[in-house]
Length: 74
Figure (cartoon, helix red, strand yellow):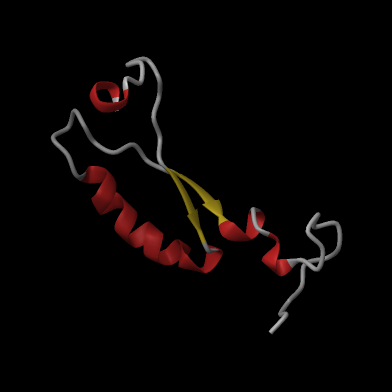
């Protein structure tokens, strides 16, 4: 990022994953192997994880999420 995008070296870069909550188990299994890749100097930092359900309104009746969560709209 420093070389290709001219991001200052002092900036902390951290991946941010957005996943469905029910995919946590898969992520917990695979993430340690992804973070461990690298030569020790360029290891991927542990990503911040946010569940999609907390950022998109698909489980709510209204866009502003002021109503109770919907169990199933199917």
